Length: 136
Image (cartoon, rainbow, N blue to C red; front, side, top):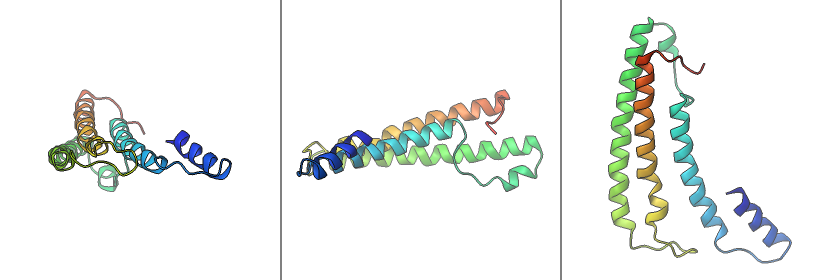
């Protein structure tokens, strides 16, 4: 994404012409980066969380609370997956304005990201009960 943006700035201000596709490519890379980054952050338990209650309850109860939270997350990510697949069916015939690629390519970030989030949620749940320490 950075290379595309730097290329756009260089071509616009040094070569005096603008790349018509650069903004679109950077936007699509950004969307994928958000989903992949969220999956990685979830895996290492680095997502923003309110843990006030977690700090004041016994460890076993805190593990149970974390389990409930991750199960709710899995249900949400599953919903996100199915809605993402539904959206792919609606946009697969559309073409992107600059690149003329099927819009299903950028929209595929939703179900791909959802699957990664679901898998990482299961890994965190397994680690929670195997006794792996948090990354704090």
